[in-house]
Image 1 (cartoon, one colour):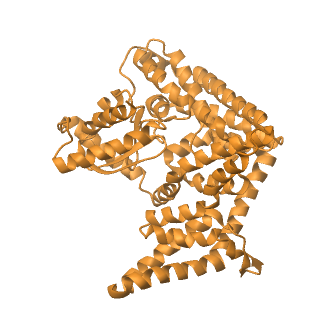
Image 2 (cartoon, rainbow, N blue to C red):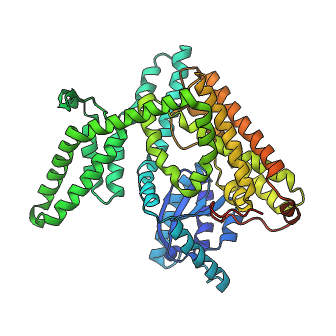
Length: 495
């Protein structure tokens, strides 16, 4: 039954994005189905947003349909199968090719596509997006292993099922011990090399035998450099491989290119990159620990308040390798619970909008449908469907996030340090992934307290400062829902 539901969702989406011939590529992350479109004007945004399974749509370098965690992983394979079947048969069974939209929609779609491409094609954003593409496929394993590690910690502390504890420890730690290999594989794949060669070079980092090697006057340690070393090693392997493909004769390419790629990249990794990346990784961990211990409240205020704008600009992707490095070093990332407060501020702001606009039935319906996902850390429907188009509520949502981040940061500063054992979820979905030396009970209480502060401050700031009189006059009436395809964060609809 569940499979039929997912297939029905995919079948409903396909004609609304222009049919199989309009699809360039398909991928998904934690919450979104990401589609590269040939012609943006063939997409029916309003009909897509009206589908029960669709939580919102987002335009970036790809057209992104928000389906929520779990659902997107099940709908994507069905969507891929329908697209493939439709291309081979001319059109997907049971569906029709979407009709050409009106000229106005075509012009609007072309303008949106051009503007969005201009905003998101800067070299920095493109590079950060590619780095994020290396780590996003690893998130499901990070989450699963993180939850198992948390469960194992509970069993260890309570003394329950002692025979199971070593097995759970092995399951939770196995992936983390080899994560540089997966990072190397994905890096080579993302940057145009042979994935297995990237993984082979990165495997040098975790090989126990490197402990016998001296570099820069000291013995190397297995795992030294971590994911940053793996990124650098695999990127170097891609460059060496491409150089070999250019100069090595085809007759001996299959023998020479892999050998030279692994040998040269491996030697540079052992006698350079492992040490340098290890120093950088240690510096990141030390700085994060120092920052939260000495200025946690201020750091939390800044991080919690700026995270939503960072997401709008695509710059939050730079944090993914930092999170992964901290998880490698300490078992958890202390930054994620602070950043998750941005979502709490967003929920509080949405609740205030709901209360301030009692006569706007369409907007209140949008908020009611998006709030459950918001509580679970899926903020796109509220951001793109409510706060960002309105302008002021987006700013006041950031104020709520800053307050929640300051609360969690202050607790870190007072000595109650904790973090998340995996990246990806936030909101209530982050509770099972919390870990720290102060004990699970205190960790849960502080995180819940931060969420409550974010909700309350986001609500109060939006209720009292989120609207001008003109906005209340114009919006406090029954009208069409605010489009989920919002204006950019740099151009808020402030009154």
